[in-house]
Amino acid sequence: MSVSDQPNSPRPLTVGLLGCGIVGSGVVQLLRDNAEDIAARLGASITVGPVAVRTSSRDRPVAVDRLTTDAQEVVDDPDVDIVCEVMGGIEPARSLIASALEQGKPVVTANKELISTLGGQLTELAVANGTRLDYEAAVAGGIPIIRPLRVSLAGDRVRRVLGILNGTTNYILTKMTEEGMDFGTALGEAQRLGYAERDPTADVEGFDAAQKAAIIASLAFDQRVVAGDVYREGITAITDTDIDLARRMGYVIKLLAIVEQRDDGAVGARVHPAMVPVHHPLASVRESFNAAFVEADGVGELMFYGPGAGSLPTASAVVGDLVAVSRTLLSEATPPRGSGPPQAVMAPFDDAVVQFSIRLAVADQPGVLAAVAGLFGEHEVSIKSVLQEGSADHAQLLLITHAARERNVQATLGALRELEVVRGVDSVIRVESSDSG
Ligand SMILES: NC(=O)c1ccc[n+]([C@@H]2O[C@H](COP(=O)([O-])OP(=O)(O)OC[C@H]3O[C@@H](n4cnc5c(N)ncnc54)[C@H](OP(=O)(O)O)[C@@H]3O)[C@@H](O)[C@H]2O)c1
Figure 1 (cartoon, protein in one colour):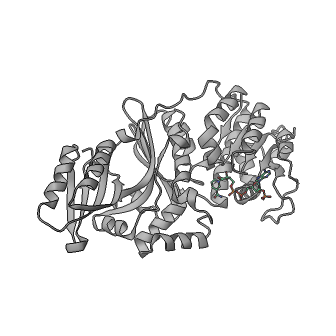
Figure 2: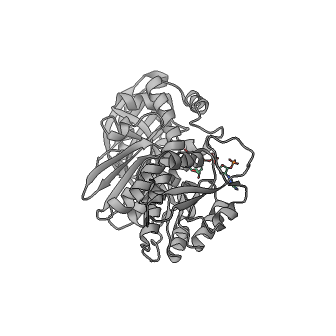
Figure 3: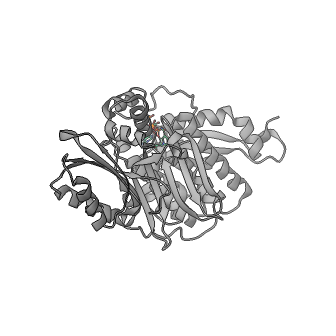
């Protein structure tokens, strides 16, 4: 006898799906494959109701009984208890989610673009209507990171989260590091395997990671941070020389999303390539995997690791949210009312205290090192180590600084470019370590 056949068992809950692409079809599959387990855990079954798509004639990997091209019809259907938005983009996703929330229907979404820009407003709308908005799959696909930040760590103080939040760039950097590929070849390989879009800009320029960084910062520090608040640099300028020098000094280069809260409460959020010591747990996150390394006062260090995308991994996070929402509906517990988190005070990016690796092409003549070191000293940037290589036309200096203010390092770089013995600043990469200066 199934759970819903038992006397006095709660009625089945119906999910209306907006979208049935990569993620949506995974959601349908998991809800079907795990129906019995879910019903046993929940005490009620969750069934797939109407499903909205753009083109109803398209072949799909899962069979769906009720397909429609009218997404609003799914939201308005009186039999739909929970709306699951997996169509992506800002509109019409935003209007449809707002409409569901205004009707008091809980919404589960995987939409990082929307949540990282309008998540605060939509959460307020959910709260005002006594319902909820959940988005575990919007950050790092299958990795449960939202609920740990929101629930499990609610009694701790998170100081910093370092994330590898984009599988495409991590795959490219892994191939450059381990197989000596150049950027273009590694990108082509990622596209061939379906890890990278034909237009890879959102991934390789760090936009996708910045959206996820904003969502993590908002939850970790309970303040409203949007994608546009996040400082962003991509990986397109990273060369095989950078990778090789980093390796020889005991580092690997990763695209990191870093969010932190200063003692005065201001929030820093940045995405850029960074040199990570080889012994740091993030250095071992390879290929298209994602990870989030959390530093908190009570628990110390935590790392969450797993697949950051893909049909079933992402659907696993979506279905986890659907079960959590169903529990609330069945227990009739009303989510807390309130006004939502305040707008974050963002720390100016040039206030950040960071270590740097700087590679200079220099003249091969006596006194060069002294002149260069003098400029660093004048700008209060102290040098941790120097590697001098090459000769004649190819002399280069690789300097690693102690942690220093971003603005002081930028001023040093400006002055270095004016120095006669410096032929060029070939690369500037931030270094992530526990160095405190
Ligand atoms: N793919 C991943 O691994 C992944 C990981 C984490 C988060 N996400 C997020 O999950 C969401 C969905 O991504 P996806 O990869 O599953 O996208 P997708 O494969 O392109 O699927 C989008 C689905 O939405 C439908 N759709 C689009 N616009 C619509 C409209 N105006 N009305 C009705 N249906 C519409 C499409 O219909 P047709 O099928 O008829 O075209 C399709 O079924 C996005 O927000 C994405 O950022 C994806």
